[in-house]
Length: 294
Image 1 (spheres, rainbow, N blue to C red):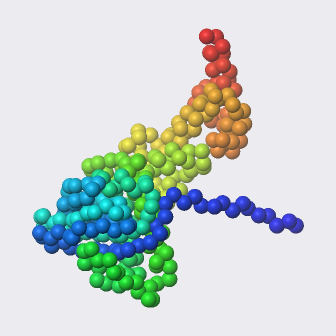
Image 2: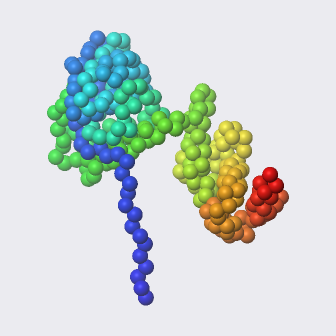
Image 3: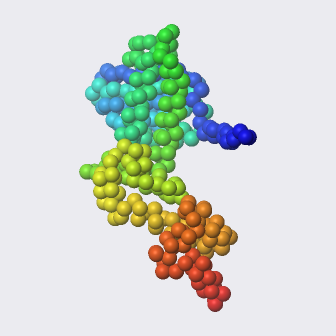
């Protein structure tokens, strides 16, 4: 019996963190200004509490609590504490992706999920680097000789994951503010997932697992934000795409059923007829007749 093999797919790498310089968490004394700093790697600055004043070629202004800025490599910058005693996370890293450039010219507020991920990075950093962690502008951090298995690689992976999610969040801002902000954020993520995967078989249980919630909460929040259920959304999205493909006329009904993830053309036909009171073939014929009559 011949051995069955599956094709192996290479990963597409969008950005890579190649090296790390430092990882610090410190309280900045009132009235303190860091010395002018310029180095051949990026520097991530996040304000955990309070606020600071930032001066660089790309940005001059205040960085408030829960905001992040990423200085470009070779961009001179200083940090100044003019009120209170803010707490900062500073991570020096080497990443050549131009997708990080926008974060050097405008502060970016972090979502709760990204904030938790940043905390995980700092925690893992403590497993790899020796203290002290609270000296601004420190460039000589030393690695432990006995850090846990994979901790160094995990920092790299977590940083890459953080930066990818940061870019996504900037390009697709999370939904919701006010009383339901956290719930709306999660529901917005669910909506984006459904929009990207509506052709696949999706269950409520799967969504609850993926987005850390339960069926009751997900159903309630989804209805409040969209006015319908998850299954309603999927059905409408599939129907809209089916009608677009039928109007285009380049695929057969069977091919469209496969394209949209239906188990059979018969099921697709029943689905379409229930919502449009006609079969897919009849719908396509009505579209052609409409245009031929013009």
